[in-house]
Image (cartoon, rainbow, N blue to C red):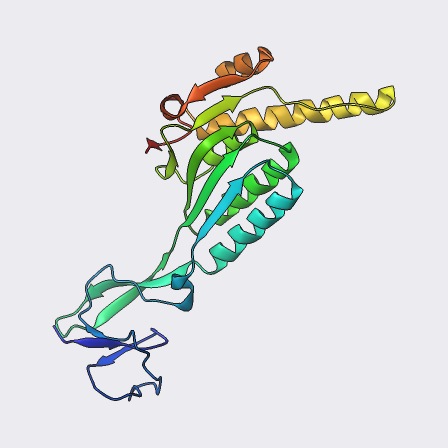
Length: 237
C-alpha cells in the first residue's frame, strides 16, 4: 500500500512528501495533516467534523424551542455529506462514495404544544430522507415528546434506564362563543387523531390500544423498558 497525505481541503490525495505546500493542489498543510494508508470505510474530514451534531430539547415543546430545533435539523442535514472510501486498488488509490453523518437528538420534556410538536416531527421526517436522526430520551419523555423520540431512525432510538414516559389525551383550554368552541373542539380531535395515527405507524401499539389509553382521561406512565416493549424506542441504556 502506498502511503498518502491528506490535504487541507481533503478533496484529493497525493504521494507522501515533505513539502509545506502540496504539489498537486497548492494547499498548505496544517499541523494535523499526517501520512496514512487508505482503507475502505475511511471518511474525509471537513471543518464541520469538529462541531457537535447534537440537538437538545430540555423543557416544554413551544414555538421558541421548536424554531431552534427545526433550524438545527435543517442545518445539520445540509452539512451531513461526507466522502467515504469504498474501495482501494492495488496501488493504494481510493475510490470514494457519499455518506451522510447522523444527527443526535437528546430530549427531556413534559410535552407542550401539539402544533409545534408536529412542526418538529414533519421536519424530522424530511431530514431522514438524507441522514439518520438518533433520538435519546433522558429524565422524562411525555406527551408530545413521545412522538418525537419515536420519530427517530429505527434502530437508533434510545432512552436512559431511569427515563419515565407518559401518554395522555390531548388537552386544551377553550374560551369564546359557541361556534368557535365547536370549531376548536373539532381541531383538537383532528390533532388527536393525527397524533394517534403517527404513533401507531412508528410503534408496536395498535390504534385500539392507544385509543383505550386516551379514553381513560388520566396520565399513563411507563418505564423505558415498557417503552421498548411498545416499540417506541429500540434500546435502553
